[in-house]
Length: 126
Image (cartoon, rainbow, N blue to C red; front, top):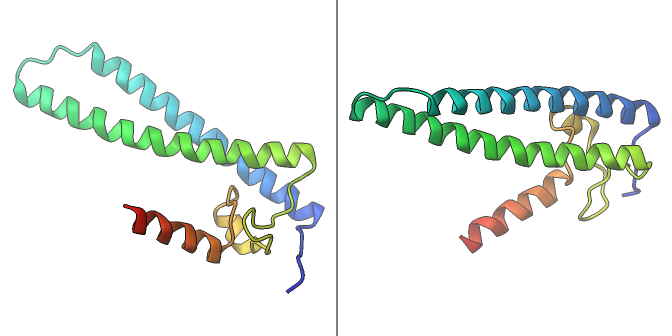
């Protein structure tokens, strides 16, 4: 199957989606940071308060880590667009990543087949 890079129009669409997602993630990260600041200033009166605050902190930390990973992928895609090297092709096999997939996950680096392969490899290693 021949490689089919994205048109300039589609790349511009993906860029806009990436910028929107980046803004949302940065806002979420700022909210988490503000929550952590307020948690550290809380007067925890008993073990239940401490347990609830710890649970919230743990959940926030997990969300923050996921958001940072996604932000890194977004920045990677934006840098490629800026450098003129973004094609919308899989970084593993060079096949087309469908525009449908990119509209849902504009920072996708891999086609579905390669993403599934990577996920299966992670499971078999664990």
